[in-house]
Image (cartoon, rainbow, N blue to C red; front, side, top):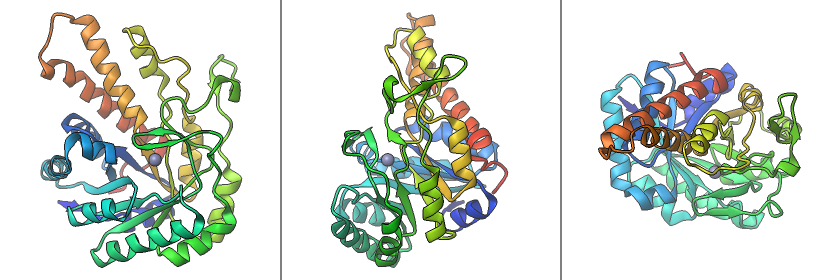
Length: 322
Ligand SMILES: [Zn+2]
């Protein structure tokens, strides 16, 4: 069994033209659904916890759920990653508490302050064998404690990346090229309609991604806010009492394209929430007399496994790479 860092994983992914899925975990069913899918498809996987997850489940529970998954699937390479570390203290407590990777999100600071806090985390992390993801540029949307309005969101400036990476020593970099946090990434007015009448958001800024990878060859890039907001699950939710109007995500063909380029890690949170909720709503609609959590959480967990398998195989291309 191996709880590993992303170092080797990203190197192989970069060279192989695929990306590793980073899935947010909050409870046992989510950890099981993700790791069962990854094991079946022989794919490495990153399990990540946000500040909200640590508040909800307690750090200890999350670490031990992941350790349990490692015992059940000794053949898997797992990374335990902190998503959106807000400050040095949060990152330090995760590094001390068994995580193998942390993100320090200094993107809301000035360029200089972002460098300073990221460098501080990198020094502590590297001394403890842990890798660090930094962020340059700001995504729009809502994710737990992170809330940036569309007007404030700004694309990563390629002219800043080299100085940032050199001065901080980060191992990977999250960039803003048009993805967005949450299940409502775009307003219908920002989208066009395809031949089937489906809303299609503006294309990701691949020109920025390409420029960054020219400046930083072989350097792993991370995409946040990259759920596709799977229409099938939105449909199930709405057909069984939910009200998710105009939920719009990133089209999967664009994520596939990003995975073949410098993007080595693609974050998925909203799609897991939708899958879990779809499973529970569908179950209760059909079985309103039931109240055993094992009954309604089983199909929810099966949907988690289904969506993770789909991402690994059809979008990220990380299957059979262990
Ligand atoms: Zn994020």
